Image: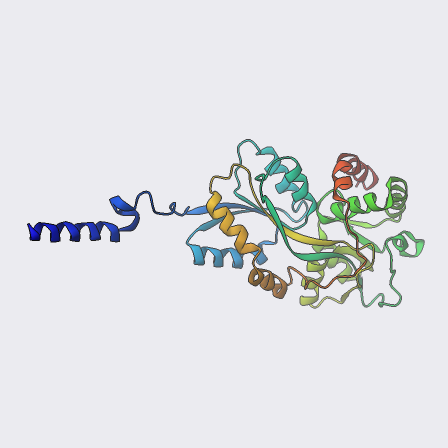
Length: 314
C-alpha cells in the first residue's frame, strides 16, 4: 500500500510539472501566446523593422506588417481601417500623426477603453537650402510664403494627404475659415511645388530647385544625414508637434499580443531608439506651438478636406 501511495504521488508531481499539458494545469495556465499579430504601420519601414524584429525576438510573436506609400502615409491605412471596421484585418495601428488616430477613434475603429496612446514627437518645420538662403534671410512665418519674392521657390507635400493635410486643417481651426482660405489661395497662386510626400520636399530643397520647404522634422533629419545643404528653421507659433500613436483595433483577433506590442512601442527604450535613428525628436518644444482644438478639427474635417482638394488642385 505504501508503494502505491508513493507511485501515486510521483504521478501527480509529474503531471503538475508538465504545465499546460498536465491535467491539473488546464484551468490555472495563462492563455497560449498568439504566434503572430497584424500591424498596420504608417511609420517608415526602415525605422519600424528593427524594432519589430526585436519584439519578435523577445516574445516569439511574429509581426505581420502592412505599410503605406509615402504619398498617402497614414491616410491610406486610416481609410482601410475604416472600411474594415466590421471585419478587421489588423490588430494594431501604428500612426505617425495624431489626427487620423483621433478620427478613427471617433468612428469606433479602436477598442473603447484605453484604445490608443501617443508617444514621442515630430514637428512641422520650414527647411531651407543653405546655398540659397541663411537663417537670417529666410522667411520666418507661413504668411511670408505667399510673398511674390518666393514665387516658384516653395515646396510642400500635396495637402490632401499626410501630415501636411493635418497641419493645414489645424491651422484652419486656429485661424478661422476666412483667414485660412485667403492664405491657402495666396499660397496656391504663388506656384509652389506640390510633392508626393514630405521626403520629396526635402529632396527638392536639397537640390536647390526650391529654396524653402514646409515638411516634417524626421525627413529633414534624413536629408541632413545624406549631406544635403539644408537647415531646419526653429519652431514658431504656427508649428505643429506630432506624436506617433499606437492603437488596438476593435475586434482584433490577437488582443493579448496586440496589447504587448502597444506596451513595447510606447516604452522609453523604443522611443529613445527612434530618437537616435532620427524618426522622433527629443521632447523639447517651443512653448507657443499650436495646441490643436481637435474637436473643431474633427467637426470641420469634411469641409476642410474638400476645400484643400479644390484650392490645391494639381
